[in-house]
Length: 143
Image 1 (tube, one colour):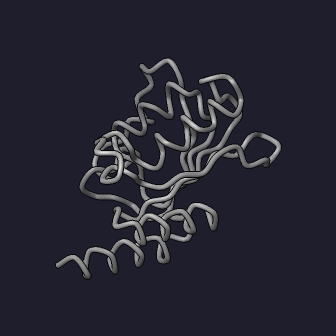
Image 2 (cartoon, rainbow, N blue to C red):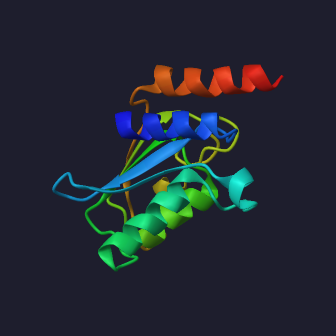
Image 3 (cartoon, one colour):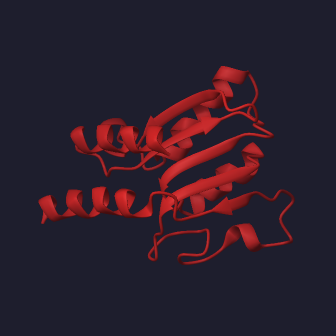
């Protein structure tokens, strides 16, 4: 999660919403890291999670990242949870909860839907205070 926080800080410095993510394989090897780049890329799908999953897929030569873990500083949205499921991520670890758009229980819980063909475990609240403070500070400066 510390690497994801470094990425979130880089996003804030770039004027992006400070969310960072990294993908680690089953042996603990870092495959990819990324931060939000929606503004820079003029792309609403350029969330940290999506960019990290794309980079991990490129690094492994496979879009299926079975056995991998995704660490992200903010509870993922529906789009990102969908990508987690399609990538076959085994474990999702996130920091701050997102009661407005979180799709791991904050607003809805897509991972709890037993009718989906893949399931990932989710662990929230890891370094939540630090992750949340980075977001609050960013938006306080914007207002």
